View 1 (cartoon, rainbow, N blue to C red):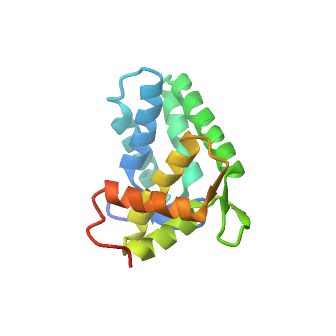
View 2 (spheres, one colour):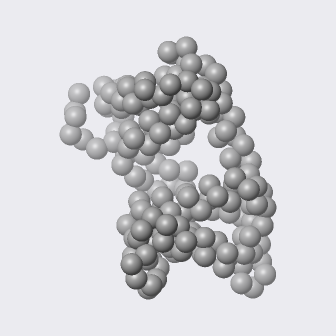
View 3 (cartoon, rainbow, N blue to C red):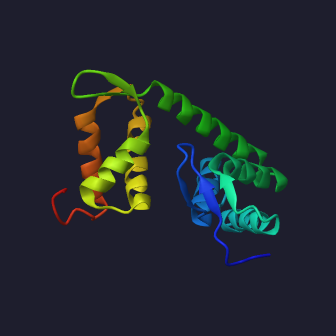
Length: 175
C-alpha cells in the first residue's frame, strides 16, 4: 500500500482535486447529525474509505464514486438511515441545481454551474482554485437553501464578494 501517492478526485465538471478525507468525513458527519446520531465515528469511516482506495490502488476516482463509497461504508455499519438521508439530500440538491438559472447582463438565462463562479471569483480575488471553489460552493449552498430559481449575474458576484469578506479574505479590493 503506497501511503505517499496522492489520490485524485475527478469532480463532476471534469476538474481534478486532491482527495480530502476531511470533506468525506464532513459529509458523513452532516448525515449523522441530521439523524440525531453522535458523529464521533465519522472520521474513522472516512479513513476506512481512504484505506480502501489505497489498498486497491485507486489513485484517480470520481466524486460520485467517493460519495457511493461513503454510503456503502455507512450501510456496512448499519447506518442505513443516515445513508438514505444523504442520498435524498444529494438528489434534492441536484434537482435544485437543474432549475437554477443565472440572468446574464444581456438578459439571457443560463443554467447554474458553480465552475464559472469559482473561476471568475478566483481570478477577481487572486484565490487558489480550491479556495475559489469553496467560496463558490458556499454561494451555491445559500442559493439552494432558499430555493432560488433565477438570480442575476450581478447578485451572484455580490454574494461571492460577501463570502470572500466573511471568510476574512477581503483585505483588498478585487483585481
